[in-house]
Length: 373
Figure 1 (tube, rainbow, N blue to C red):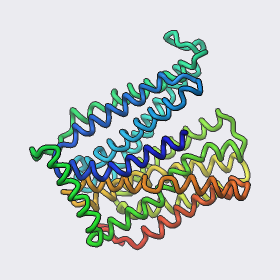
Figure 2: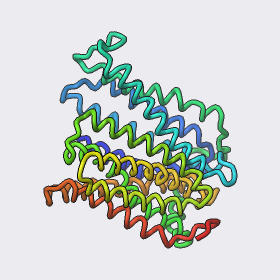
Figure 3: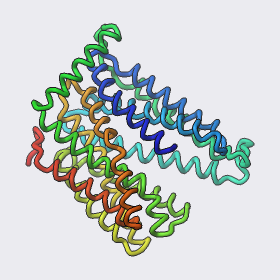
Figure 4: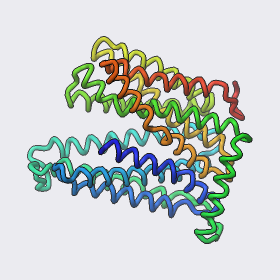
């Protein structure tokens, strides 16, 4: 049920992301749609409070997560498209890296607050009932409140795209026509098309790595829950530092070179993780992987910001979201079936390296305007 819910959510983003971006490019204002996506995300997260630890509430939890996740990802299409307008010349990579790094930092602080104040507190605060898992369930409203607390400044302190004044129906028709024209005209933009294909493949590998890392740590190295949580925290810290540091590299060497370095790093560290003889070596591999996760994400965003035509920026970031969701099932499916066929988690996890290698091979021949080869 969990897998199906996330798959449905990803499919919704893949279908609506490019269309929503094209609609904004054709019709004007971005903030109202971003506010609507944010509101649905917040409500969907907060509604998880009502999911009690009983099988009858599993469907409610899955639906809430699917809706909130889809709304969040669609909002990210609009949020990412703001990057070129907010960053000054020569600062796109830096700002993208800082954004990812702060996102990791904020998530970690929220996690620590949740663990210390609610999950591990004995007795639970505010009269929360441990018997009905309220100290766990309160984490969802906390996440919703966190989103409100740190999300509102973007609506107050940033400018919006001007409205064309066209009715929604007319803007939707014009946006749809523009989107189809873009898809048909990819021959005229081979660099963007090849980049989207490359990203689709290496992001599949990255998402699969994040989804299965905890399972691999527990199954192959015998980590308990505390160990897995500690490993996740270390991974997020190194990913945040990597995004922060490589933001400068992005602006100095270019997004393509940053991605190439990051993918080579993921291949090397991932290979170490596959053959690691002990938990200590696995920890070392995981921290190294984290260093290259952040710049892989942030440089992908800055590269699209540099490649996209200004008049189609929202549409292009919609297609970027599509490239991250269109084949999201492939990595988990491959890892699962190879693990089942071989009886080895190591062999199953090794298939992720293929995604990084293929993505790197597609990326290497790209010539990015304004970047030295």
